[in-house]
Length: 269
Image (cartoon, rainbow, N blue to C red; front, top):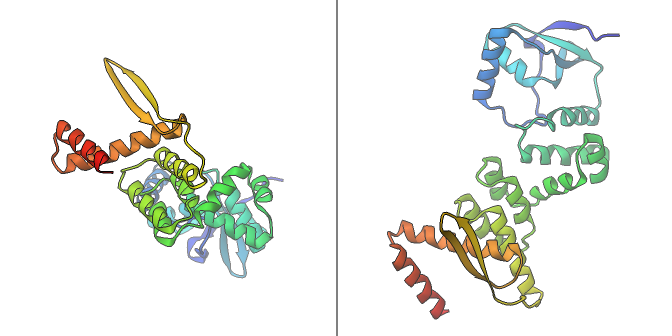
């Protein structure tokens, strides 16, 4: 039997905390403009609680309709779910949407695991995602509050956040987070630096200095001497050079001055 679509007064709908934590005003305005032009294409999913209604899926559509001054929303009424069922359904819907941030996904996943006692593998199966994604997202929640906030604001990409979570030293972690936010290092550069530091800490000797030349075409090439023979070693050296070159540019160095300065620094070390 096909679900019946009914009109529900917007004033009777409760807007509660859910999986999506941030509602972008510009996106809501764009959705409202779309609804005003072609109408509400898809009904929202609601459940009844006494004389009022809760939202299972479609809060942005409800917000957009309210901004247009509409009084009702087209909806399909579902049976009231348990808190765990509601969270699972919202995760199942929202995790397939690209605009849900990694931090929102991580927080929702943690809440779902607490509500159901599921482990990471069970959550992955229920949501139709890879277990490795569950691991990476949950790792973000182990980061300090200030780094999590930088992730929420998009100053640090989620992939780099996962690499930061692998760093045990809080001071080094904070320094790397600052470099990432300032654009002085990339996720790949961070991964290379972290792995190089790990090899040094475990006493594993590098394979040996290796000169590597990357031909870029049009007569351009980059040559570096790496302490090892992996692509991570290569990236780490390039990232360090790029960081120091940018710093030199900000100080007004010419190229030959920068090269001399780096050579003097190396000799002093």
